[in-house]
Amino acid sequence: MKRNLSLYVHIPFCVHKCLYCDFLSFDDALYATQLQYIDALRTEIMLYKPYADRYVVRTVFIGGGTPSSLDESLIEAIMKELRQVFSIDRFAEITIEANPGTIKYTDLLAYQSYGINRLSIGLQSADDEMLRMLGRIHNFDQFVAGFTSARRAGFRNINVDVMSGIPGQDMHSFVDTLTRVMEYRPEHISVYSLQVEEDTPLAKDPVLLNMLPDEDMDRRMYAMTKKILRTNGYERYEFSNYAQPGHASQHNTVYWTGGEYIGLGLGASSLFKGERFTNTRDLDRYLQLMQEASEKMTPEVDKLLLYDAVTNALRTDQTAMYVDRRMEEYMFLGLRMIRGVSRRDFKERFNKDMFSVYGQVINHYTDDGFMEVDEDYVRLTDAGIDVSNIILSDFLLEK
Image (tube, rainbow, N blue to C red; front, side):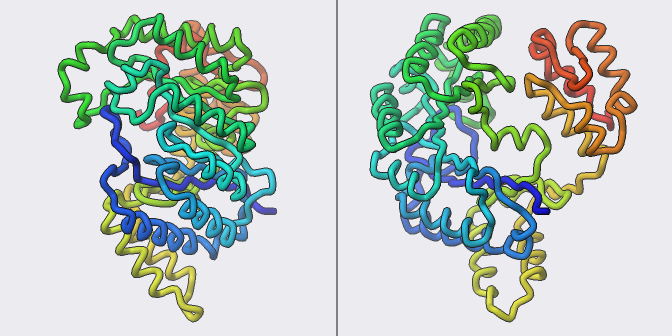
């Protein structure tokens, strides 16, 4: 029986890098570099051919960067290569990220023809001045135009990213963003709190830093998000994610529940064949390794030996996922889900009762009102979610 697998494809190119962004992306790449990168991606995809027949792909996520900034023919090349190598389920969830400033109706139609059936649009705010301060390349009218085009093109599963804690944001402007987004009834809304990352332009701008809402305001926005979205038919299923019934992100749920996935492209992370690893973040090295691999892909070459040689050179932070590490991640990530972690699934995966491993921690936080337990699940309460960083660290066995 084939095992389930998810694929993440990283596109590290964008039109303009936002002031808060510390993702692996470039805003000055030439078209020739983009072509070279897509060729390299196709080579990396082909490396997995010896293992592909053992799996059926249930989800694909094309992220970045800004995938929608690429010519749609390059997205087509990626999808064709994926389908040639992997068995992709007929009903697979296939997502592409898009910036409102790069959405084209003709591209959306093309995405549909390639089997892409879910769109994730990075709005962040409905306030044009806040978007400008963040370094976004779009305004709200462009979001509306892009969203409307996506509906006309046939997309019936759309996520919209919204951000809280933006410089100059108050409760009124934040609620206004949520309200205006909900008018268009996207199937999914992700609401993230802005994080100030080191070495980003935002972290070095004292004027913008001084305009950030304080921690109390950010927490109030967080609480208001739950109230407003629930009232309007969006169920919270993970700390930062809300969906209409039946539209939770299948791909992200794989991450939170310990499923296998392969990350393809520069800096992409994987959990595959019992190991967690990350591809190199060095673009020149990535392109060179894939060029060398492509030249060696002759009919006579041993595909397994080539896979081992190239991927060992490509990967960083390669870690064998022994049982203790797998249990840690199962709890650490799974407790982000509002339903919590399944006691039965834990038993089936690890041949251990959850309470024999974590009973002391669970009982402690249950007694304090931060966790709750029933016959099927262990979960954080609302109070527990508010201090989740502290609680989740206690599920690290090495600690």
